[in-house]
Image 1: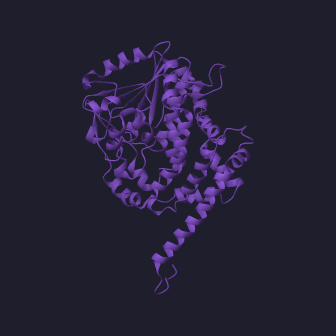
Image 2: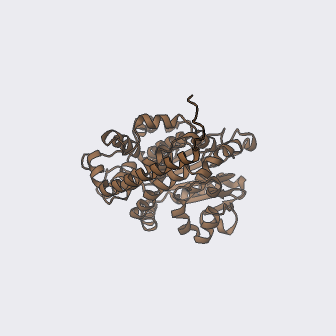
Image 3: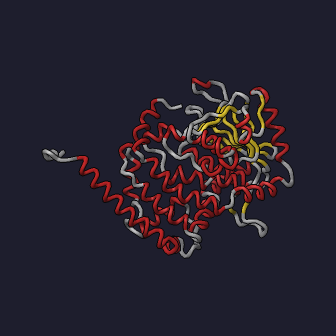
Length: 404
């Protein structure tokens, strides 16, 4: 290692590096904003090809060197813990914000994310034949027209990471592709974790150990999650199979045992019916973690009201499932021992001929696609900045040690 020169001002050097980064990123942001449509058209052959977000940034790195990090640069980033990364995902965020803001490119990219994944298409014949697919984070089982998605990461209380996102998107695609499935149900499995041994848990939010180790990527987790399977639950799967609708959508129910923390609560905001045990609680600990809780900032004010939304998102307030303010998120609360029977009753109510069409119209009214696009465009950059914020970097190791 080369010895540092005596009297070298490391703070001055760091400040100069930061200034240079800011100047380059200012130019990059202006360039993408000015040329987003042309860039996207070049990468997608005039919008005739549907590239997912991960495919798009890789294609951009090859076609326009320096615009986004190269694959070699991103591989080096992935090998480092979060505190030691160079923050190259910020440059991906700049690029994706510009593309998503563009009136033609943005909707086309979001449509690409609503198409069935290659993994789901490979697994579809098996699921159609057996009605069961077991993945690392999710078990999918079809019974009497109901698709049961069970979160089965029992060692980490169903904390979310890139594997969970991949498995959930695969499962959601299979549910929407299977014509014999009428309703989807998401529930947490029985835990082997010592603190909740033998109990069901819905979701502990983002996996803080993975965040600390640098394994919560912007593209393959934070953006894929919001624009992929969560949008597919809410908006439907883009199949172009029918003249009367480009989307295949179905009713969805969530059943919450124990708690829905962070991403778990975010998920509830797109379900058609939410059932919770009376001893369960909900939370969005974004202020504590220093990051943005997905699309909750966009949805929760509309659903729970602006004051409750600020208390939960900014103040870290926990909502007990049985308290009045939680009833805007939770439709039905029952004692823990009555969950199974209540699930059966709610599924029967969702299994109606007109439910799918009506939920589509309600969702279209509540969250027009253009409004979602404007939000997710800004989220692409702001969340990238947050995961490299000094406060987050300073907290992640503590999160990993004291994770939920």
